[in-house]
Length: 247
Length: 134
Ligand SMILES: Nc1ncnc2c1ncn2[C@@H]1O[C@H](COP(=O)(O)OP(=O)(O)O)[C@@H](O)[C@H]1O
Ligand SMILES: [Mg+2]
Ligand SMILES: [Zn+2]
Image (tube, rainbow over all chains, first blue to last red; front, side):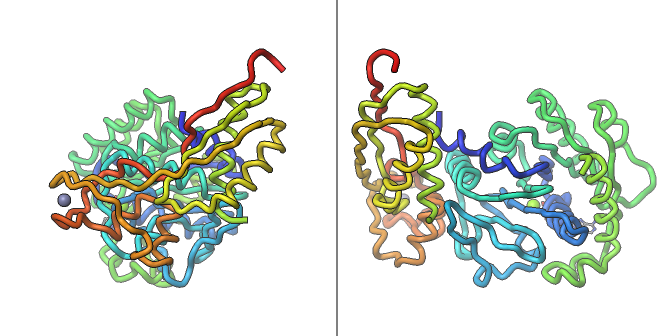
């Protein structure tokens, strides 16, 4: 057994809930939703962390408007992530220096174990995790190494995305992981095939976020982001998440 | 106290787990050069933590493991020098050794697709327990 795995539960001791944003399909809004949710929780006075586990393509710092040269983690019996716009934020980009980071699966797993074993989160109401598309190392590591994660499954109304989340819902259920809910993003019409699918797996459709054509202009500027209709929908989702988690 | 403390914590927990209350006659750790672990600080932290956990270790030994990389594209094997990267980059690699892929490419074919064959970080090589119960 890898000694680092033993210390992970201690690192998560003070974290009330771990909520990874997941979907096997790329481009459905995991990063934007996970980062915006973190901002919304911070706005509600919650202690919130955001961990970017999209190791080879981390990008949530862009949504958070973080200047990674300015804000760096501190060393204090481990790695203490800085607060960025009210969010305790950890990303491998602090260390990759804006360079590409192409990694094989084994290296991704190593990097994740290192992060989970050394980052000191202290007390948090919620720790959000951004994950990459696919059902691979990052998703499996969250399932295997973190106790009782409550994933938020993100999907668009597209059949292609819905087919993907069914596979993810199966993997999660096989692992005894209880998804917190399904979020339908970039909604363009009233009808939804997702509700039935979610129901089949005993998971609630807990949010429907419309397509917001103005979102692109807001990325990188948290003030503008918070003024979008997208963000107000995410804020309602945040309230729902708090209720579901009993926080 | 720095990040070495966090690394020592997992080793201390591991040793406590395998020793199950028995004394440890010998503990051998290998320290990969890539992570540039400060052995003095690490050793201090580990002894402190073992002590807190009431784990007695008679002999504690550290082995240094050299860095060896192997390119997946052309098969070239090499040992990069961390000094040439500068202290800021070494510091980054210290926290997450895999970010070496952000800073070094294969000297033969320029690929970033290489394996870390050895020298990554802290590993337990051997835990020898005392005979019998305590
Ligand atoms: N509700 C939305 N309305 C409009 N654009 C969106 C919405 N949600 C996400 N996007 C955009 O879709 C793209 C993909 O989002 P992203 O969060 O990177 O997806 P993922 O992390 O799942 O790959 C981004 O350009 C993002 O700004
Ligand atoms: Mg993403
Ligand atoms: Zn090569």
